[in-house]
Length: 136
Figure 1 (cartoon, rainbow, N blue to C red):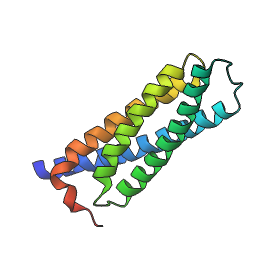
Figure 2 (cartoon, rainbow, N blue to C red; figure 1 turned 120 degrees about the horizontal axis):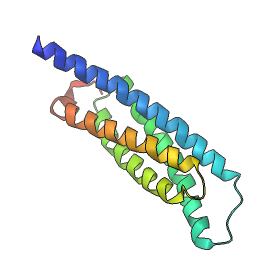
Figure 3 (cartoon, rainbow, N blue to C red; figure 1 turned 90 degrees about the vertical axis):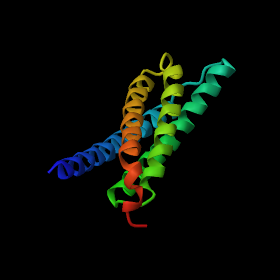
Figure 4 (cartoon, rainbow, N blue to C red; figure 1 turned 60 degrees about the horizontal axis):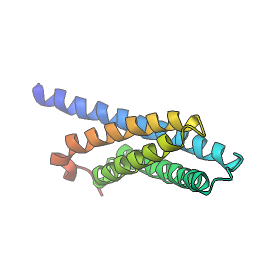
C-alpha cells in the first residue's frame, strides 16, 4: 500500500508540474509580448536588460511547453528536460526581477518562474531513480 501511495504522489506531482509549466509559459509569453510595445529607455543598460528579458521570456516559455508535453507523454527524457526547464526558469526569474521596476508584469512573471522551477526541481528529485521508466 505504501508503494501505491508513493506512485500516486509522484503522479500528482507530475500533473502539478505540467500545470506549473503551462502557467509559466503563459505568463512568460504575456510578459515578453507586453514589453515589445514598451517605449525604450534612452539608457543603453536599461535597453539591454529589456531585450534580454524579452528573449529569456520567450525561451523560457518554449522550454516550459516542451517540458509539459514530454511529461504528459511520459517521455524517458522528460526528467532531463525538467532539469533544464528549472534552470531556464531560474535564469528568467532573475532577469525579470531586475526588470520589474520598469515593467510590473515582470514581477509576476518572476514569481511564476520561481514556482515552476521549484516544481521541476522536485520532479527531477522524485523521478531520478525511475527515470528509465518512460518510453522513448
